[in-house]
Image (tube, rainbow, N blue to C red):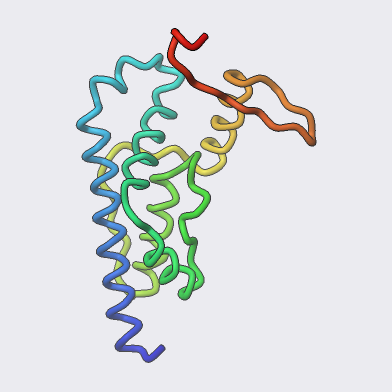
Length: 146
């Protein structure tokens, strides 16, 4: 990939990721009342869930392919730390592009390790512990079906 083309592509990816990040934050803001009704212990997870759902409203396949071509995260495994993963890729793209890393707006995101641990803990609390080779299945249905 020639340098000029690469710079244009990185700039486009950076712009796309900043737009996705903004959509995550605006979705969070639009659901602020509901998030604040969640128990304080679970509020970071609620914020992260909102970010994840906002991100999954978009087809990421082309973005993921382009990020992978640059050797960056394709954002495929960010369930527990959505905004932190987006921020990390934005930081890397800014470094590749040669720009500076100005602080990103919003509350601090759920960090990678903390998000992974919270996701595992909350799944165990909700669905129970599993053995090494077992799976958990959750089925939802209306009360009338029960």
